[in-house]
Image 1 (tube, protein in one colour):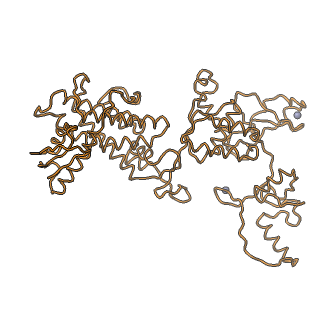
Image 2 (cartoon, helix red, strand yellow; image 1 turned 135 degrees about the horizontal axis):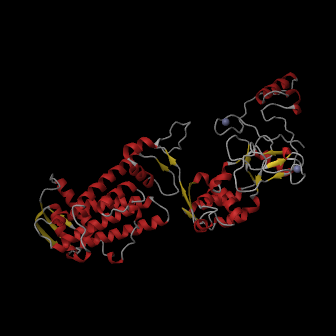
Image 3 (spheres, rainbow, N blue to C red; image 1 turned 90 degrees about the vertical axis):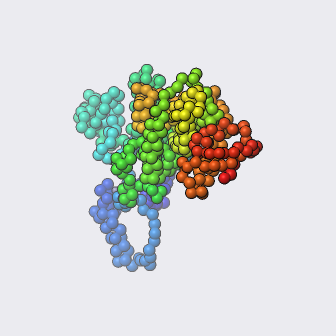
Amino acid sequence: AMICSYGDSVDVKIFRDMGLEPRVIIDRDGRMNEFSGFLRGLSIVEARMRIVEELYSRGLIVKVEDLVHEHPVCWRCKTPIEFINSKEYFLKQLDFKGDLKRVSQLMIFYPEEHRRRLLDWIESVSTDWPISKDRYYATEVPVWRCLDCGEILLPEPGRYYRPWIDEPPFQQCPKCNAPRGRLRGELKVLDTWFDSSISVLYVSKYGDDKLFNKLFPNTVRPQGYDIIRTWLYYSVLRIYQLMGKPAFKYVRISGMGLDEKGEAMHKSKGNVIDPEPYLKKYGVDAFRFWAASASKLGSDYRFSEQLIKTGSLFITKLWNISRFISSFPRPDPSEIELRPLDKAMLSSLNMLLDKCISAYNSMDVYTPINEIYNFTWNLFASHYIEAVKSRAYNFNGKYPYGQQKASWYVLHEVLSNVLKLLAPIMPIITDSIWRRLYSKRSIHLERIDDPRSDWRYSSKPLELLVNANSKIWNLKKNLGLSLSSPIKVEIKFSKEYADIIDELRDLHKLENYVILEYYGETIEFHY
Ligand SMILES: [Zn+2]
Ligand SMILES: [Zn+2]
């Protein structure tokens, strides 16, 4: 039987499976060799043309037509390439498939669905891993070979060997006693994943037993899904072979950063985005705001200058909120008398803490940044702060002192908690405000507080406030009044929430208002 050698990797597999002896006719320099008859010495391209000529001259051509077929090319420069035969070092992996699947189940994946990709890949592995290559720059394969008996000699561990230039670290061949001069250093280098697959041992301080036992394998592997088959798989393989354990406690898989149109960035496509100008223009925190808010963990995310701008506006907003709040002292909790709106604000803060902490615990920053942004801007700043401004100043002494202090208390509680929640994502602005307002010590040494059981109040007054605000602002807009103009209205709402009428009156300059009792869930205004 004859089979055309190595048109693609299927041929390679057939040769291996059937144990066929290949007859190589192309040299490593791409020329036809002595087994190729009249083609000898020609390049591959020349040989193809020469064969066609030969077939014509022998009258063997029946017809000529165009055919489309696949041909392997260099991934980088697209030059057509040929399979060649060469001896390589292989690492066993087929024998380990069952164990690798088992330890893959022992690691925690965020998000969980990416575990499947690793398991599918393990399942599909069909040959052992060729770990050596012929390249100039890479880690040397640290072995010597005896020219006389062919024995492969492995030097003592403990130092870095460069077999292509180092003296052989052996006096003679331990097998056949051939002299040192007969020992040749290996010229091949290792596959890059052979090194990077044990990076977890390096970062866990392998060799320092005390630290290593603490750190390994309580580690997290953060990486993109594009290298699950390589970096993650080879790490799991090698760490299992070396340590008999799963390589990581957690695997955090992120998506790919795409351009603004949602396309992958490539040098050749010319759509690569350089982050430097954006970092210079908007700062690190605004850039990180985009990175966190652009997509869910595990999904691809697009570059968006608009989101960076939003982050930049958020920084300004935080700064302004903080400046306002900093004009009030942080009162002692024993002196405060919380109003229903204050309680509702603390209760909403509790819910924010809940959501963010559970998201952070699953290594997710997308939920926290979006929740914190909405809470801080659209609830705290737009509604609560606006509603308690006049109570916080209390120029005419309308509110009891305890209620005035309660507003200060809530303002500071919300701000300080928001800063701590936000610190992992926007580290610069949060630390800067924190040190000005709350402590000389960095915010990054603080713990995020757990939700407080004594803050579990009804959030209804805050919902009513939001609802009422938008109705009155709309009413004023429709009447052509500025938002700060006084207005005379008839208000209908349930007595149960009558307390927030004070904040509404302050905020909207309600004049001569009439309150009508009404047992509904919203507040109605009639002009
Ligand atoms: Zn190339
Ligand atoms: Zn020998």
